[in-house]
Amino acid sequence: MSDTAQTGAVHLDSASFDATLKSAGDMPVMVDFYADWCGPCKMAAPIVEEMAEEYEGKAVIAKVDVDANNELAGRFGVMSIPTVIVFKNGEEVKRQTGFAGKQGFVSLLSAAMEE
Image (cartoon, rainbow, N blue to C red; front, side, top):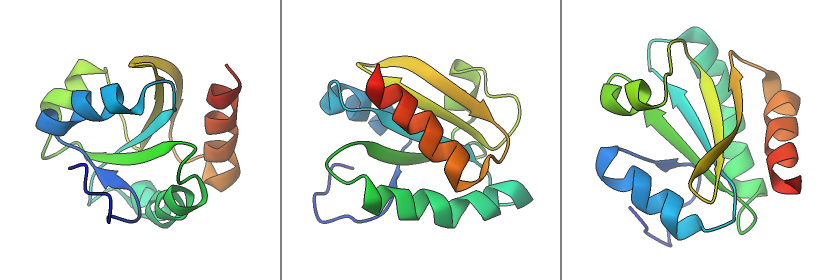
């Protein structure tokens, strides 16, 4: 899924998740764990896409559909959605559960970028 022509958030699955974290190196990777039926997730979706464009080259913005990838949700202990986890150097550094609005997501990512 490392198509350089892709715009917006990268959709990850079990096969592409670890490779994406590894290829990002010390660039933060913000992952939105969501489901299509989740109301707050639907509110977060356009914000996540907008952030993918705004942070291009500075951070990787990605999404994981928990219904299609429940093993990834289980691996990271995602019990409610939306949950946004920021990884850096392959390790979780920040987590936000629930819809925090754009400012909440930006604050989360900014804090991870400063670490």
